[in-house]
Every structure is written in C-alpha cells, then in structure tokens.
Amino acid sequence: MRSTRVTLATGGLMTALLAVACTSASTIPQPDAGDLPVAPESARVDLAMPTFSNPTNVTNPLFPVSSQASVLLVGTVDGMAFRTEVTLLPETRIIEWAGQSVEVLVSQYVAYLDGRIHEVAYDFYAQADDGSVWYFGEDVFNFADGAIANTHGTWIAGRDGPAAMIMAADPKVGDVYRPENIPGLVFEEVTVKQVDQTLDGPLGSIEGGIVVQELHMDGATEDKTFAPAYGEFFTSDGVDTEALAMAVPTDAASEPVPESLVTITDGAATVFAAADAGSWDGATAAMEDMNAAWADHAAGDVPRLVEPLIGEALDALNQAIGAQDAEAARQATINVARLSLDLQLRYRPVTEVDLGRFDLWLAQLQLDAAAEDAGGVNGDLLTLDYVRDRIVQALDASTAAELNLALEELQTAVTDGDFTAASEIAHRLRGLVSGL
Image (cartoon, rainbow, N blue to C red; front, side, top):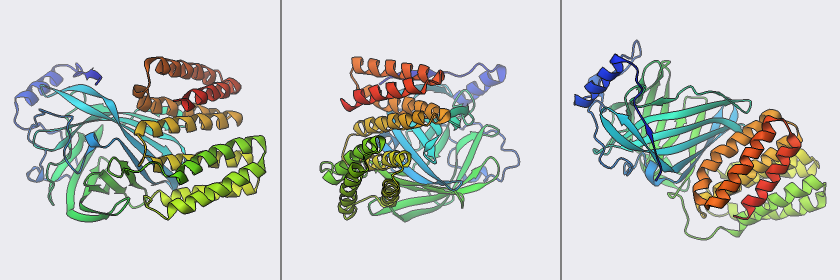
C-alpha cells in the first residue's frame, strides 16, 4: 500500500500548545460552536480521545468503508439528476493528530450533476479501537463549467482541527457526535433519532438501519439514514436527495455477466458508430436488440433505483433514433452504456467496470469536441484524470506509462483548444483501453 504523510501545519505557538494538550488529554478539546443550537456535552459520545491500533480494518457495519469496493448513489439536486461514484482506493495515508500517527483509508467521492462533474473529494477514514469510525479530513474540489472553481470544504485533522467521529461504535437514540468539528470551516453535529429500522434496500429489505439528524454550520438540518453493510444510505433536506442505488461486494452476484447486459452495452457502441455514420437502419436494428435485452433483464433481479434510470435512458435513445438526431443518439448511447456498466458491477471486478467508464468518458470527450464545447471537453478531461486514479494500479507499468503519456498529450490539446487533436487522442486512448 502506498502511504503519503500529512503533517501538522506550523501555525505558531497556539497550534503547538493545542497539539500538546491533545496528546496528554483523555478528552478532545472542543472548539466553540458559537450560537449554533448544539446538544449538551452530556449527550456527546465523541469526547474521549480515541486510540487506533488497526485503523484501516473497519468492522463497523454502519460505516463499512474498508469492505466496500464501489458504491453508486443517485438522486436529484436543484431539480437535476445527481449521481455519485464512491470508490475505495488501494492507497492509504498517514495523518498526524494528537500525538498519534494514524494510517487512514482513502475513499474517492465523485459527484455528477446533470451528467457533468460537480464535486470530487478524497475522504480519509480510520476505525478506533472501540469500533467507532473517525473522519480525518478530505481534499475537496468543486467544479463549475468544467473547471475547478474552488476547494471549499477541504480540511485535514491535526492541521486544521481535530479528527471527528463519523459513526459511533453502537449508536443509540439520543447519542450525539460531530462528523466535522471545525466551526467556521466545516461543522456537522449528528443526533441519532431512530435505530433498528427496516429499510428498502437495492435488492430487498435491510434490518438494523438508523436515522440521524445532522445540524450544519448554517443552522440548517437534514436527515440521513445509514444501513448495515452499506453505510450512508439516504440523505434528504426536503428538496434534494441522495440515495444508495447499489454497492459491491454487498450486492455482488456469483453468476457471470448476464448476456442481456452485454447486448445492451455492445448495442450502445453499435448505435454510437451508426449514428455517427448516419446509418439509421443499423441503429434501429441494434436498438431493437437492446430493447429486447432490457425487457429480459428487467424481469429478473435489478437494483430498484437503477431500473427506472436505464428505462428512461433507453426511451431517450429510442426517440433520438426515431428522430434521426445523431448528436442526441450518441449522447443517449453513452448514458445507456454507463447505466449498463453500473449493473455489471454486480458481476465484474470494479476495475473492469471503471475501465469501461473511462472509455465512455473518452467517447463523451469526442462528442463534446465535435460540438466545440470547451467547458465540456475540459470537464471530461478532469473526469478522466479522477477515473484514472481508480484503474492505474491494475495496469502493468508500460501500459500505465502509455496511458499517462496519452493523457498528458490530451491535456495539451485541450489547453490549446485543439478539438480535432483532442478527439484524435481520445480515439487512440479508446483503442488502448479496449485492449485491456
């Protein structure tokens, strides 16, 4: 495992004194939360200084980050489709906090809004010896128009403030803890409202869920649900929602990839090429096969939140083919293929699925380059860079070097605004990926 050391920032005498106090104290010094309506300290279960003997082995069933390879969440934000891919990376980091050097897991969170990259975060987690899970910070990148707009929300334990409990060892109604505890920078206080809940899971009922209410730095609250073997399961502030659609290995199946999903994915590639060439008879024939394949697959065991999404995407593709709208058809095929790959997570290694996602973002870049959409192309390039983090460890050294070099060339073409060169490089990269 690779490790990157994150050390305590030298912020002067006060920072040094705080570090010494944290090292020697049996409780964690608490920052002033100002006028926020926080719970009394008597309700808090996160005040004792934790110890970390085996921090990357997370056994807490309500936050099983070390055993989840990939998680898909879907929902709506501001009336637009919201999609999140969460991936446990193979690397760890060492973070210095309160006199302890703690090895933490690194989880990559990539959120898309209306099909475009919206937020990326690298989250750092560790389990304490009592079974509670602690949040050691995050590197955050927020996007606008295909570019990094800011890094608001970034914080590291020890440098900016204390690590914070993100899941109690055995949460009970009335328990209070703070997943983020640096008022003025990041702050969340959680109160457990319900336990032992039965939830509608991706493939059936789940027992033992909990519901919490989360107080934010602006005084607003939202409800969150956590489920055993899944972790964060449902979030809603009354308008925007984010819900877990599936997770592996929790929802993994033992059988091979169903032929119906292979037909849908291959058919999408056929329609993409046919629409590009104006071969509408070929596109129609492939679409008929895809419709039949989906009808067959939908009759079986399909994660309940993904099923309507792929149905809608297929409807959009049918309409685009009927209208002989090449651009809409190619975009719709990418959307269909992405959802088909989501379903294939249950049957294939995560890295294989991420290779497929990487290929689809190359196809998206080709489509955006043809439209001379500079923001779209730049966002596609950044997305490729983040997906690369999930696949590069599975490649041999020479292939990884070839992929990295091609991405550097692509970066140059995008920076120069050379859409033709960018499309050609993306085409070459698709050939490399298809051979893996």
